[in-house]
Amino acid sequence: MTLLDGITFKAPVLRVNNRSRSIDFYKKSLGFTLLSEENALAIFTACDNRDRRFTIEESPSTRTRAAEGAKKLDKIIVKAAKASDIEALLANGAVTHQVFKGKNGYAFETISPEGDHFILHAEDKLADLSIVDRPVLPAQPEFKGLSDYSFEEICLNVLSKDKSETFYRNVFDGEFPLKMSFVETQGPDLQVEPSTTWDIEILECQMPVEYDLGALKSNLEGKGYDDIYLDAKQKVLVISDPSNIEIWFIK
Image (cartoon, rainbow, N blue to C red):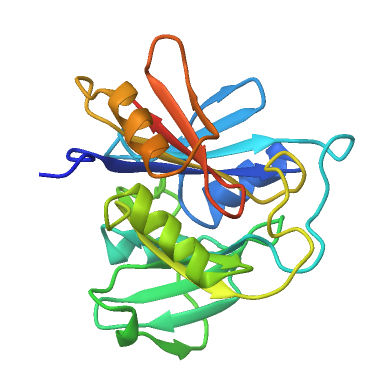
Protein backbone atom coordinates (compact mmCIF):
# COMPACT_ATOMS: atom_id res chain seq x y z
CA MET A 1 0.00 0.00 0.00
CA THR A 2 1.07 3.60 -0.62
CA LEU A 3 -0.05 6.90 0.83
CA LEU A 4 -2.08 7.61 -2.31
CA ASP A 5 -4.01 4.35 -2.60
CA GLY A 6 -7.37 4.90 -4.27
CA ILE A 7 -6.40 8.07 -6.16
CA THR A 8 -7.74 8.50 -9.70
CA PHE A 9 -7.21 11.21 -12.27
CA LYS A 10 -10.38 13.27 -12.65
CA ALA A 11 -9.84 16.08 -15.15
CA PRO A 12 -7.55 18.69 -16.65
CA VAL A 13 -8.71 22.31 -16.38
CA LEU A 14 -7.73 24.72 -19.17
CA ARG A 15 -8.07 28.50 -19.22
CA VAL A 16 -9.64 29.86 -22.41
CA ASN A 17 -10.35 33.29 -23.85
CA ASN A 18 -13.83 32.79 -25.34
CA ARG A 19 -15.99 30.19 -23.63
CA SER A 20 -18.66 30.03 -26.35
CA ARG A 21 -16.13 29.46 -29.11
CA SER A 22 -14.31 26.86 -27.01
CA ILE A 23 -17.52 25.00 -26.14
CA ASP A 24 -18.32 24.76 -29.84
CA PHE A 25 -14.85 23.35 -30.55
CA TYR A 26 -14.87 20.74 -27.78
CA LYS A 27 -18.35 19.53 -28.73
CA LYS A 28 -17.88 19.40 -32.50
CA SER A 29 -14.21 18.47 -32.82
CA LEU A 30 -13.63 16.25 -29.77
CA GLY A 31 -17.16 15.00 -29.12
CA PHE A 32 -17.28 16.07 -25.46
CA THR A 33 -20.78 16.51 -24.03
CA LEU A 34 -21.47 19.80 -22.25
CA LEU A 35 -22.70 18.90 -18.77
CA SER A 36 -23.05 22.33 -17.17
CA GLU A 37 -21.92 25.93 -17.11
CA GLU A 38 -21.13 27.45 -13.74
CA ASN A 39 -20.00 31.09 -13.70
CA ALA A 40 -16.77 31.10 -15.76
CA LEU A 41 -16.59 27.29 -15.97
CA ALA A 42 -17.86 24.91 -18.64
CA ILE A 43 -17.81 21.26 -17.58
CA PHE A 44 -17.90 18.43 -20.11
CA THR A 45 -18.61 14.72 -19.79
CA ALA A 46 -19.30 11.68 -22.00
CA CYS A 47 -22.67 10.56 -23.35
CA ASP A 48 -22.65 7.16 -21.61
CA ASN A 49 -20.41 7.89 -18.63
CA ARG A 50 -21.29 10.96 -16.61
CA ASP A 51 -18.30 10.42 -14.33
CA ARG A 52 -16.00 11.69 -17.09
CA ARG A 53 -14.85 15.29 -16.69
CA PHE A 54 -13.09 17.93 -18.75
CA THR A 55 -13.25 21.57 -17.69
CA ILE A 56 -12.50 24.94 -19.25
CA GLU A 57 -12.43 28.27 -17.43
CA GLU A 58 -13.14 31.47 -19.31
CA SER A 59 -10.62 34.19 -18.56
CA PRO A 60 -11.07 37.22 -20.85
CA SER A 61 -8.23 39.26 -22.30
CA THR A 62 -8.72 42.03 -19.73
CA ARG A 63 -7.14 39.66 -17.16
CA THR A 64 -5.32 36.95 -19.10
CA ARG A 65 -3.31 36.72 -22.32
CA ALA A 66 -1.88 34.27 -24.83
CA ALA A 67 1.37 32.62 -23.80
CA GLU A 68 4.57 34.01 -25.28
CA GLY A 69 6.52 31.22 -26.95
CA ALA A 70 5.86 27.64 -25.89
CA LYS A 71 2.78 26.91 -23.80
CA LYS A 72 2.97 24.70 -20.72
CA LEU A 73 0.58 22.25 -22.40
CA ASP A 74 2.20 20.40 -25.27
CA LYS A 75 -0.67 17.97 -25.93
CA ILE A 76 -3.37 15.81 -24.39
CA ILE A 77 -3.96 12.30 -25.70
CA VAL A 78 -7.57 11.12 -25.41
CA LYS A 79 -8.66 7.53 -25.95
CA ALA A 80 -12.20 7.00 -27.20
CA ALA A 81 -14.09 3.89 -26.13
CA LYS A 82 -15.46 3.41 -29.66
CA ALA A 83 -13.55 3.96 -32.90
CA SER A 84 -16.90 4.48 -34.63
CA ASP A 85 -17.36 7.68 -32.60
CA ILE A 86 -14.18 9.12 -34.11
CA GLU A 87 -15.41 8.27 -37.60
CA ALA A 88 -18.68 10.06 -36.79
CA LEU A 89 -16.79 13.18 -35.69
CA LEU A 90 -14.87 13.18 -38.96
CA ALA A 91 -18.10 12.68 -40.90
CA ASN A 92 -19.72 15.63 -39.12
CA GLY A 93 -16.92 18.10 -39.79
CA ALA A 94 -14.52 17.95 -36.85
CA VAL A 95 -11.63 20.35 -37.31
CA THR A 96 -8.44 18.33 -37.82
CA HIS A 97 -4.74 19.09 -38.09
CA GLN A 98 -3.76 15.55 -39.12
CA VAL A 99 -5.73 12.36 -39.67
CA PHE A 100 -4.42 8.89 -38.91
CA LYS A 101 -5.54 5.30 -39.46
CA GLY A 102 -4.85 2.41 -37.12
CA LYS A 103 -5.90 -1.18 -36.55
CA ASN A 104 -9.17 -0.12 -34.95
CA GLY A 105 -10.09 2.82 -37.18
CA TYR A 106 -9.41 6.50 -37.67
CA ALA A 107 -7.70 8.92 -35.27
CA PHE A 108 -6.85 12.59 -35.56
CA GLU A 109 -5.00 15.51 -34.08
CA THR A 110 -6.91 18.73 -33.54
CA ILE A 111 -5.96 22.16 -32.22
CA SER A 112 -8.24 24.25 -29.99
CA PRO A 113 -8.91 27.98 -30.51
CA GLU A 114 -6.22 28.66 -27.87
CA GLY A 115 -3.68 26.46 -29.67
CA ASP A 116 -3.94 23.39 -27.41
CA HIS A 117 -3.16 20.12 -29.21
CA PHE A 118 -5.27 16.99 -28.74
CA ILE A 119 -4.89 13.52 -30.23
CA LEU A 120 -8.06 11.43 -30.25
CA HIS A 121 -7.70 7.72 -30.98
CA ALA A 122 -9.11 4.28 -30.15
CA GLU A 123 -5.98 2.14 -30.58
CA ASP A 124 -4.18 -0.18 -28.20
CA LYS A 125 -0.93 1.56 -29.13
CA LEU A 126 -0.31 4.95 -30.70
CA ALA A 127 2.49 3.33 -32.69
CA ASP A 128 -0.20 1.58 -34.74
CA LEU A 129 -1.24 4.91 -36.28
CA SER A 130 -0.17 6.08 -39.73
CA ILE A 131 -0.93 9.43 -41.35
CA VAL A 132 -3.63 9.24 -44.02
CA ASP A 133 -5.71 11.66 -46.08
CA ARG A 134 -8.91 12.77 -44.44
CA PRO A 135 -11.69 10.44 -45.59
CA VAL A 136 -14.89 11.64 -47.22
CA LEU A 137 -17.68 10.21 -45.09
CA PRO A 138 -21.46 10.65 -45.06
CA ALA A 139 -22.74 12.88 -42.28
CA GLN A 140 -24.20 11.24 -39.18
CA PRO A 141 -26.78 13.72 -37.86
CA GLU A 142 -27.90 11.33 -35.09
CA PHE A 143 -24.44 11.33 -33.48
CA LYS A 144 -24.42 13.08 -30.10
CA GLY A 145 -20.78 12.79 -29.01
CA LEU A 146 -18.23 10.36 -27.60
CA SER A 147 -19.97 7.55 -25.77
CA ASP A 148 -17.01 7.34 -23.40
CA TYR A 149 -13.35 8.33 -23.30
CA SER A 150 -10.35 8.53 -20.99
CA PHE A 151 -7.33 10.77 -20.75
CA GLU A 152 -4.37 8.60 -21.68
CA GLU A 153 -1.47 11.03 -21.45
CA ILE A 154 -0.68 14.68 -20.80
CA CYS A 155 2.55 16.04 -22.22
CA LEU A 156 3.96 19.27 -20.78
CA ASN A 157 6.61 21.67 -22.05
CA VAL A 158 8.96 22.35 -19.12
CA LEU A 159 12.17 24.23 -18.38
CA SER A 160 13.66 21.22 -16.57
CA LYS A 161 12.53 17.69 -17.41
CA ASP A 162 14.48 16.29 -14.47
CA LYS A 163 12.89 18.71 -11.99
CA SER A 164 9.36 17.95 -13.23
CA GLU A 165 9.88 14.19 -13.23
CA THR A 166 11.32 14.36 -9.70
CA PHE A 167 8.33 16.38 -8.45
CA TYR A 168 5.72 13.96 -9.78
CA ARG A 169 7.70 10.96 -8.57
CA ASN A 170 8.15 12.39 -5.05
CA VAL A 171 4.63 13.76 -4.57
CA PHE A 172 2.87 10.69 -5.93
CA ASP A 173 5.10 8.03 -4.39
CA GLY A 174 6.40 6.98 -7.78
CA GLU A 175 3.57 7.37 -10.28
CA PHE A 176 0.92 9.96 -11.14
CA PRO A 177 -2.48 8.32 -11.85
CA LEU A 178 -2.14 9.27 -15.51
CA LYS A 179 0.84 9.05 -17.86
CA MET A 180 2.78 12.32 -17.73
CA SER A 181 5.53 13.14 -20.22
CA PHE A 182 7.77 16.18 -20.45
CA VAL A 183 9.49 18.04 -23.27
CA GLU A 184 12.37 20.22 -22.12
CA THR A 185 12.22 23.55 -23.89
CA GLN A 186 12.51 27.30 -23.33
CA GLY A 187 9.82 29.94 -23.05
CA PRO A 188 9.11 33.02 -20.91
CA ASP A 189 5.69 31.73 -19.76
CA LEU A 190 6.54 28.16 -18.78
CA GLN A 191 6.43 28.96 -15.05
CA VAL A 192 3.97 31.86 -14.81
CA GLU A 193 1.05 31.87 -12.39
CA PRO A 194 -1.89 29.88 -13.84
CA SER A 195 -4.12 32.94 -14.03
CA THR A 196 -1.68 34.72 -16.37
CA THR A 197 -2.10 32.85 -19.67
CA TRP A 198 -4.60 30.75 -21.63
CA ASP A 199 -3.02 27.43 -20.84
CA ILE A 200 -3.40 24.38 -18.63
CA GLU A 201 -4.30 25.52 -15.13
CA ILE A 202 -5.22 22.51 -12.94
CA LEU A 203 -4.86 18.73 -12.81
CA GLU A 204 -7.70 17.38 -10.66
CA CYS A 205 -7.27 14.10 -8.79
CA GLN A 206 -10.14 12.31 -7.06
CA MET A 207 -9.57 10.85 -3.59
CA PRO A 208 -11.74 8.34 -1.68
CA VAL A 209 -14.23 10.05 0.68
CA GLU A 210 -12.51 8.53 3.72
CA TYR A 211 -9.06 9.75 2.68
CA ASP A 212 -7.11 11.83 5.24
CA LEU A 213 -5.90 14.91 3.35
CA GLY A 214 -4.40 16.27 6.56
CA ALA A 215 -2.05 13.30 6.67
CA LEU A 216 -1.15 13.90 3.02
CA LYS A 217 -0.34 17.53 3.81
CA SER A 218 1.95 16.47 6.66
CA ASN A 219 3.63 13.90 4.42
CA LEU A 220 4.29 16.46 1.67
CA GLU A 221 5.61 19.00 4.17
CA GLY A 222 7.96 16.29 5.42
CA LYS A 223 9.28 15.97 1.87
CA GLY A 224 10.12 19.68 1.81
CA TYR A 225 7.00 21.09 0.13
CA ASP A 226 5.68 24.01 2.18
CA ASP A 227 3.39 25.92 -0.21
CA ILE A 228 0.35 23.68 0.26
CA TYR A 229 -3.30 24.73 0.62
CA LEU A 230 -5.80 22.62 2.59
CA ASP A 231 -9.32 23.96 3.02
CA ALA A 232 -10.91 24.18 6.47
CA LYS A 233 -13.11 21.13 5.88
CA GLN A 234 -10.08 19.16 4.64
CA LYS A 235 -11.79 18.22 1.38
CA VAL A 236 -9.44 19.94 -1.07
CA LEU A 237 -5.64 20.01 -1.01
CA VAL A 238 -3.67 22.01 -3.58
CA ILE A 239 0.02 21.89 -4.44
CA SER A 240 1.73 23.42 -7.49
CA ASP A 241 4.23 21.62 -9.72
CA PRO A 242 7.46 23.25 -11.00
CA SER A 243 5.50 24.80 -13.90
CA ASN A 244 3.00 26.41 -11.51
CA ILE A 245 0.27 24.01 -12.61
CA GLU A 246 -1.99 23.35 -9.64
CA ILE A 247 -2.58 19.75 -8.55
CA TRP A 248 -5.92 19.43 -6.75
CA PHE A 249 -6.65 16.45 -4.51
CA ILE A 250 -10.43 16.41 -4.06
CA LYS A 251 -12.59 14.25 -1.79
